[in-house]
Length: 116
Length: 109
Image 1 (cartoon, chains in turn blue, red):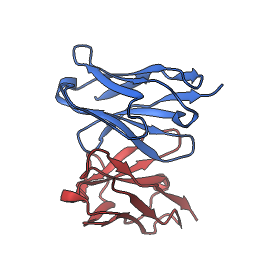
Image 2: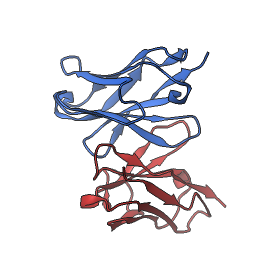
Image 3: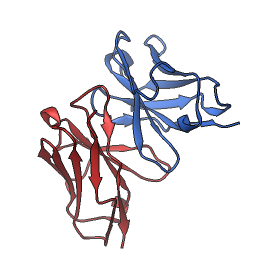
Image 4: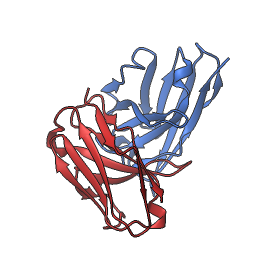
């Protein structure tokens, strides 16, 4: 069974940083592209970033480019999102998702709240 | 960036009725790389349809997708109580970035 478990969210002040993690199991992690998608409270889904299977290629939404960094450790079956220079509008549940162009598997999400 | 516009914003229907949800793209979505998701409160999204018309694993056949180019449709042939939820379309033909539509809420009338 595919499992994706996010962690690392929490309350952070504007300008602060967090590192989100997504622990994967039940599949060969190194074979799959991975993504982060976020959802602000009461709002829709927004794609954030993606990384290819070996970590050599990454892409970002314009709204997070230069502030967020996606990475992965295939030996640890873990996906990361380093989020820096956080703003109030970054407040959201952050989901990791497995897939190249569509997402059959999602984690349960981790909540990031940016507030003073 | 391809913008996806979903309509209607809310669909009020009774169990057993047919639901037709629309997703219109600002530019042609290449290869019909269009997916549909269902999301219930407090839950992660669930993939229903990929490639515009292929049902994901375990999805009942009352869900069907159609369309190409800029106009896509998700149809639920007979609404079951568990189908009342939010639905999102997503395109991945023009990547990056991937984009999602704003969602359609299917509520009980």
